[in-house]
Length: 157
Image 1 (cartoon, rainbow, N blue to C red):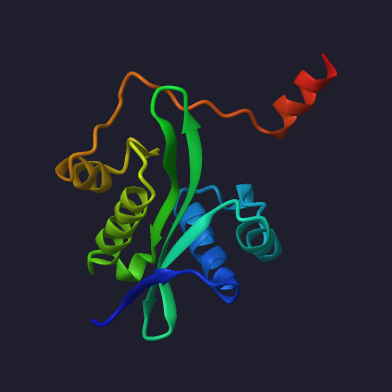
Image 2 (cartoon, rainbow, N blue to C red):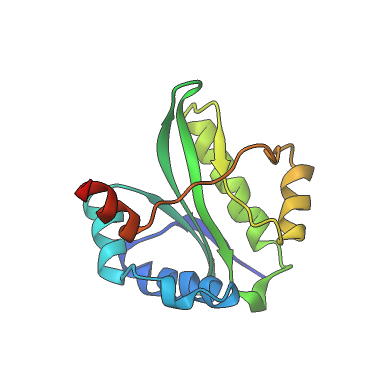
């Protein structure tokens, strides 16, 4: 199989959103996806809030990795990998590993001292893959989210 890992273009965002929705559906959270193609285009290409890499297989986007910079009070600038998604039909082909390597290269090229992401505890294959690449799974750290309702409630207080 011939593929190219490249930076996403604005006109790739329809297919990127398809991938986001495919993952959300797989995790039984399709109704939670609120982002639109217009959001992705505006935030990624007009405001520069993220960088997206895609796996292009003969003109079709079969995988993506979306990253952005964060700042750690311990390490300085870091890269956060928000999502790495490969279409279910293309898993096991090496696309995920190629996207992952691109993210690591991007972090290296930008001189960060940490790349961070969250992985579902049920995703045993990904956990094993990440550990085999030298990544550490931080069991003692918990991911915390405050959704829109909680934000609104806290603003009212």
